Length: 266
Length: 328
Image 1 (cartoon, each protein chain N blue to C red):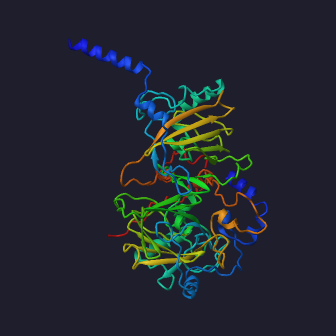
Image 2: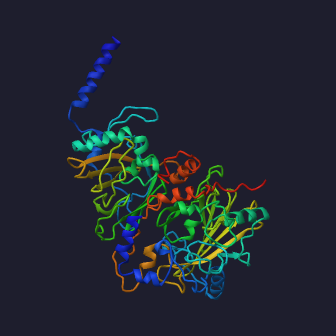
Image 3: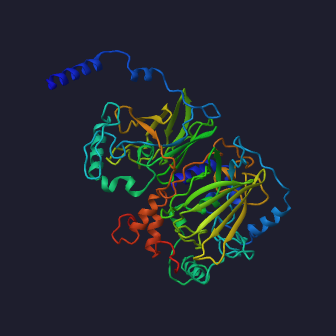
């Protein structure tokens, strides 16, 4: 008897979810959140933010392994559209990730990777720029909104050159002038120096931003692709950026290691 | 390094001659002539400050002094050598001491503390007089590490928000809460320590605790320990000058508190060559050089561009500076 009742309820629940009717979620989706504004009249994205996902390990769906939590893909459509030769390199990167991942050398991780590493960052808005202060490496990233276009290249920067604009409530950041030294995650997903990233930061509530990044690189991918994930405002009353000075810890650990590979051929 | 050179060439095609003629640390490393007049620091600033009329600073919407904008650092020899010195070599021209108190401009080390400082100085391996002939430590800055007070002595932009003061640098930043929250436990140590600010009249006072004692004051071995606390005082002396003071307390290596003091100028202002370290700060008002990007800070990637540096220092036999442990 109890089982039949349960089945009935489950059946009703299924019908409810399949029946098109206005739900709370849809109502929320059609009524965009109206964010607070800065003194300049722009949406106020300021504060300390952090992801809660496993994109730092692998942007694509992955099972758990030692020290690696399982996770869904954050890539729209699930898989990154590699060109065939690039996919082979990605697989090779994955096999050798313990030594090839630039994160293991404490280098600036590039964009968008630094966004979804497991460290908080703080958005600071001014009239001429939006600055993002990252706890990781104490990196500071200046997104200029002063009317200057990207400077002429070629320039090979670890974090690229960021130019921002507002589209409605969304901060849109165009990033080019990358080098080919950074990866997207710890799973070997990579790019060339032709990388072009378009980031979108959209407030969806007082404590949430939607982060989207469209990634183009004609040398590596067969078409542009996109990742998206929420950013969560850190809620602790004492939240602040501390520091993760990766090169200092690495150099100190390796300095007295006679077989360290950190110091190259010297 | 290559991208850094590219950026410099790109931006300085016209301004390069200006920099050569007016040596400063803007290009990363300046080369000084032996006949460069002694660079003014604390003593000259104390004399200048004594003549300044009182100044009422503008206020932010929150009713606190408005310190916002880009400010030069100490300038001079680029934090090569903190105490007064005559010309040593091309990177270390004659310069007054940073130390305003004690009045003799010397850091008041304890006997033990001074012995350690002299060991570091003798082991720098720079070809300076009185070296021991053995290499001991190289400055943490040689590894592109950033720390207090080095960050604070360099050019930066101040941004004020309700409850915090933010300092943005060429590489790195500080966010200083001014909302009265307590600092983190001193059991947790950081290269930048943990900063808490409050206003005393027109002065932003920043207490820095939780320092890890791995940083140096300059690049020639004036050091502190993980027992050290710093108190910074930021005050507008006139519309284009911040009177910057930092007092250092650590009874385990200094016999008394001591203070550094120098002016920070807005770019293009001020009577001396204490201009900023940020390329932008130096170039904003450079005549005959109108670059729309001059006010921007571009990626330096010091650590990434300096892969051979640590390898060379290690191969030369330098040790890694793990801080000093004073006697109990």
